[in-house]
Length: 104
Ligand SMILES: [Cu+2]
Image 1 (cartoon, protein in one colour):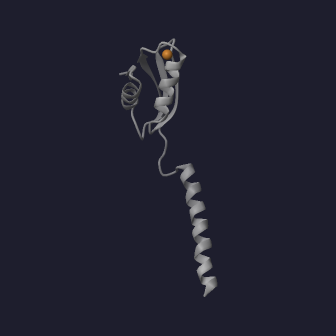
Image 2 (cartoon, rainbow, N blue to C red):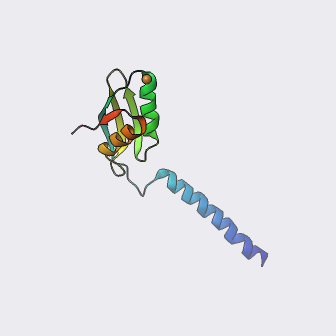
Image 3 (cartoon, protein in one colour):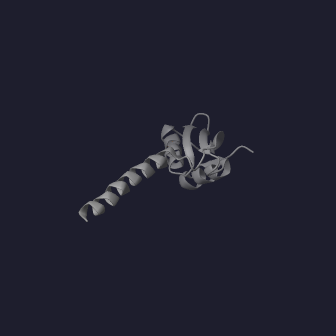
C-alpha cells in the first residue's frame, strides 16, 4: 500500500511546479501595455522623482515608470487591463503629495 501513497505525492509536486511556471508567464491575463506621460508638480530634486517612481512601482498594473524632476513629468508604462492613467495619477498624488495629472 505504501507505493500507492507515494505516487500522489510525486504527482502533486509536479502539478505544483507546473502551476508555478504557468503563473510566471501569466497567460491568463494578457498585458495591454500603454505608455503615458503624467504631469507631476512640485518635484524639487532627484530624490523627489525617486519617491514618485518607488511609490508608483508598488501599484498594481504598473510595468515601468521614469520620473523626471527637471521636466516635471513621469513617463508611466502600465497594463491597461489592470489600471488607467487617471488611477496611476491619483495613486501617485495620494502617496507622494505631488499634484499629478494624467493627459486628457
Ligand atoms: Cu526632492
